[in-house]
Image (cartoon, rainbow, N blue to C red; front, side):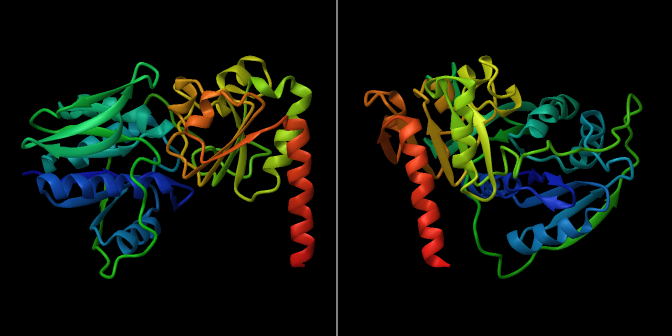
Length: 328
């Protein structure tokens, strides 16, 4: 049985939370099918991040160094990882289903001659075989997949495999490998954050999302006001809100947008179509605010508020400020 290899995602020298969720998916598969675990940390000057991964997970880490890997490049990542992973003969290669992971994972599978199964939400074992489950047809159906023999590259949905909060009692070993892989087609110069965001959609602890029920662009100020009450928050939207031009498509949540799993998701004026729910159902706590008590979003919400946004949000903001003043 070959090892289970987890590809960590790093940004600015830090480990992104999706990496630890991918580790939990690897642990689940290892319990079911056996096989040792190994984490690969690709990039440049990644030793610090590799040490953090080994300390927190207790799993051995290979820091995959390349001086051209200061910024992400799909071609370079596929070359680096294929060079490092291929000789290991892994059973599974697990990649976070982020914009980056979904970008390079299929190409990596091609180079490894492996199968590729994306957006995995659960793993299970019954009747002597492993079953992987993912959403299909815009979240309306669930698809069960039996992975074939040989190497399989998986991408795992954010929030599907919650990461452990505590560090491992025994840290893993860290080794370093320098790779000469190159991507001669282009060389990324760097990555810049979008101005005005306190966190990216994938990393935000709180997502405040606007839907068609917000009514008009001028009312988006209410959504921004609500988001400002929380640290590590970001404003997002449904397909309808982005189609209306209220938000850029980079902020869209759903099947044709981003998949998020924050600690708190506040759906403002969102009806709750299957396409949208597919992108946020992994959130730890879902609060829905809608004037329609029959809106489907209330079927998955932990807290439901049937009220006009223009009435409720100012009241909530005022109450939050009063609590803050009392604490001070």
